[in-house]
Length: 328
Image: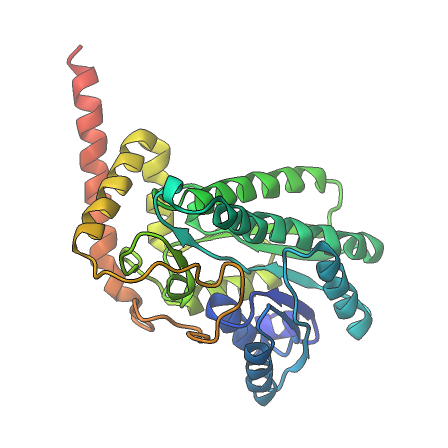
């Protein structure tokens, strides 16, 4: 059975569907014949996405929703259930980033990052699970990112949310082990070419950009399609995600120091910009596309040089770490 046969007529809820990976996923699911329920804070952008998905042949319901509002998330789940009498896949995808020295970034910003990135996903799972248990099946897909394993210096609130999110999802998988047809699936993409960094709260005073390799968000959207059709507990999107996870697992202290060193080096040469709270507290009206301006869309081979260099670097560092102990 092909993907279209498995997803045609399925009800798919996507949070954070107004831009980036969520928007890319909406287009991908629309082409698979899914019935889409699109959610985010930006109603104007959602309506734009919905119209484009309808042009692709999909039926679409738009439900403007703030994921930090637990009651609004319950209303979203109920709206999806009432629309088609079922919900097949719930994709927790809405997320934000705040960059800056921890003590120079307002605590209100750190708190809101955690509210969206962690509690937003918890609100989603809390809202949809009663429906899944009643109907006896369903899939939750959590877009966590490799940030669930690799800390981001100057992004402490973001890292706290992602590490905690991975722990929450693992606990939920264990809790639902007795429900054989309810799946919790985690996605760990590497850096994506989305508008997310453009939307980020930025207290560094420097223009931000992701470290290469930067992947096309359609890679993540395709992974969502595959996991929705064939649930899998953990999926790593892009070779760099596995490399970064392995590097931190083998040499956590060294990897953390190197990441911090890299970022401080970047800040020395990056262009200055004004401080901003981005889309942390309110939606924005710019950059509401699938792609940002940083990656190599449609050219996966462009990443190979970075992967090769990264593998060589990790191997060299591992060797350096082993040699001193071998001489004792």
